Length: 480
Image (cartoon, rainbow, N blue to C red; front, side, top):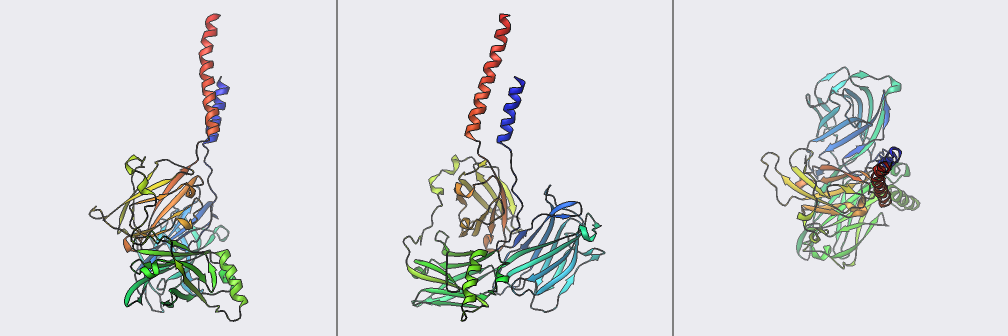
């Protein structure tokens, strides 16, 4: 009987074992990145970098904060007393903008960059034998060209000390990550005697040319780009967005085709965003390399620019203009759902407090998941109404799920069906440009495996047999 019970428990434990996904390096067209795990001294560690805010408005020179953390890959804890040789360069031009030794006693290095057009770099802060001190107790301020322009940046960091102890050369580790400072820009166009707004968000470089053709009802945007395949090979994702005001009904009501440098490119058209039709270009490396082959094979092609075109190809069947879809939320009474406890997080610079709940409170693989949000002023606690934000989902491998991206939404509830949650593990829900601040908020949620029906039946039958056997034992003893 004891052996049987132990076997039953073993089956139960086997059915609920959690398998942790492998670590992946990623760079996804947003202002944060995390490396693969590497050996640093006697530890295995990952480097996490984040730019706050991760979006700038065209023409602005707002302060950008860079946060760098070295984390123990096994415990997930931040490693303290870390020194880095930190370099920052523009990916597009390979121009080195910053290179210094940085130290943080807390393990969370923060550098406030104050962008300017100056060609010189000024550093304000204290230093010790390990480098410039860059933690909350001693702010480090850098003035100069770093992050003065939108685009993709390469972060190179060599870890030279951990736990306040210098590392031998063989114990050091070097990390390279890509992060993006995206740029939002508004263009005014005239059509039919009226002025309308078309906005763009570029995640690679600043737009240097924009044109709207009223005859073909098409848009063309151009930015610097190097089509050399060695350069393209380093780009994990090209990301670009058009925002067409729904007031511009003649254009917003069109069906569209996307093109990059004259090559047809799949696009995603979101007609549910409040006030806008949003068009997403999300071109992964393999498609970029394919376009590069065609550009390089054409002797007349421009090899130093990316040409993004949006071509009207007729009237859209379902424009959604004047009304957005409810993403399924109207079909379910929220009060009947099993909601999680409230999770709270501040936006990346603290200007907005976000409360989030999800349902069901325990998320299984293939579940439809409901998220609801409350936005508040962090100082007064007063609820903020009509807050606009973008929302997107990252899977268990920290990869951006392209079709999860919803732009400029003001809905307080978002729904993602079970096709988004196909694996057990930790997912990230990311809200960006919250309340038009350029700031972001992220929440982590855990998806657990469905309890296998077959094992449940076996366990149930086994427990029933165990009960019957337990009842028979005293009966036989009584006969003796």
